[in-house]
Length: 266
Image (tube, rainbow, N blue to C red; front, side, top):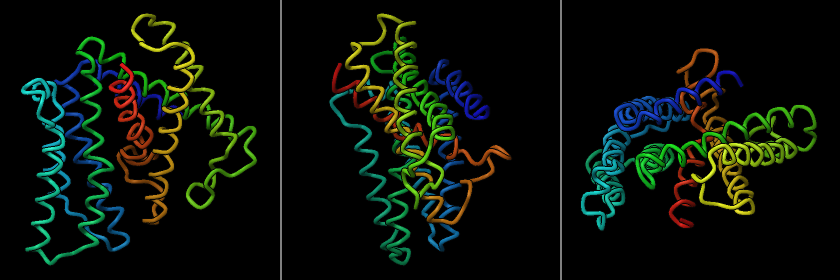
């Protein structure tokens, strides 16, 4: 829990400063995270196309910058970057042995990490550079509250397994505790920053539930990948606390979902 809180504080500071820090931080996350995925899948003798993941991921990050989003906004820059990257991955396999497992798992990995990292940039500048830190802080608060609530409620009252084949320690009671904690945390947080959050209390309940669900789904998804690969941690980014993906897993889904909700409802 302490390491998770420290990680979230560091992330919050980086995101507060904006592009001068978030750009290098996301590039580092792209490089380290794809390396962790490659080492994980290598344990199942499944190679990943790291050049595709990293160069394509760089294109996605560039396409997600506020400068490019503002330049000719009618162009779906991220989709263009995605299409070019996928096309390049197909062409590579045509000349490098047509390794279908490598292509399939590389595409899965691309959508799992490089594609979702771009949403940190999109959300940081939505609707603008000033309010973007408020909107981006919402999944951070909801995710941390979910992790804390699920941990303590699950440890105290947990009896019924949530996904025993993927994460035996997760319980339904912990899942519900995470939902409740996320709502309470967002209720308090949005009360402190009144006027910056464009939803009422009823909408906030739905918003919190969706973000908490996304955070726990992200956690379970990474657990599924680790179980498939036969590893306990994704890496050794933080000795004793696992890899970078172990720290980002809950945000990988909750940040994109926040952006979708913001675009759809505001």
